[in-house]
Image 1: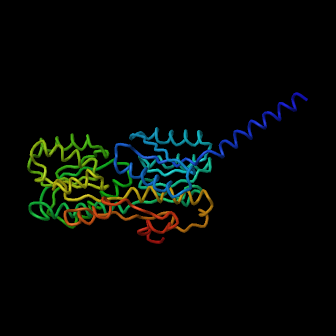
Image 2: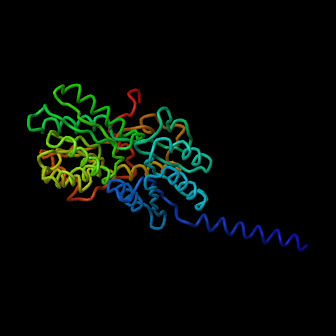
Image 3: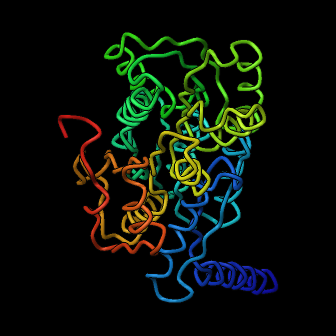
Length: 351
């Protein structure tokens, strides 16, 4: 009889714990490289905008910055899955593409719906998994091309001169695609010479130190610096400013951070491209939540909705006023029911 009551007591404890877990709000995790990146924090802000569309107490947002450490990113996601007992959804911008596979496997095993942006290994797609809802990215090839052409045409002799190239992280899909766009532009502008090409790993400090080395080696022989993101562009301009060359040697950026916009406004950068992290974070969460709540079935979703491109916005001296009126002077508003809204085009032509 004592054993019987002990079993009943144990069962009550289990049921009580299960009920407590069920009463917990859903955790919406945003896994990205760093809270120091304004663009990455736009993901978090977008997630908060999404949570605001839900009944109060339904969900909470948790940021998981890995600070550039691949193992930390994977381990943090695994730890959160364990601590929430899988009561979560996930939006991730992988620090490096290979991180996607172990995270996909962990989410598949735990039944966690998730979405990703920017980085994934070639040939690894949401359609290979039940719980990976979709993969989104800006057209990074077009980004690399557009900022290159804008820079080339802003040189002292438009379309002619010598540049240095500051890449991001070499293993990142976004960096590889932006470099493809740059190479396309270089083919169209044969009078542009590349003096050097270095990887700055998306970091301001590395952008600064690399540019300092370039200035020591090439001096005013440099006509422009093609830079793959705003955070690094800030470091580039710091180095140029120390030599009195900011505004004389222009750089570029991508992400549309307030610092990047300010560089354009001050005439220190030829352009940046606003990726709209608010939109990416909002709809990454909206898609994962729709799948978790049964509004979407990944088994019946078409390729377009599982792999799509979102729009960026080229911000240059010519477009700065329009950009600020649209994105800076007002807070973006999105409809979680309109899941077609963020889709600018297919990631694959056949979609």
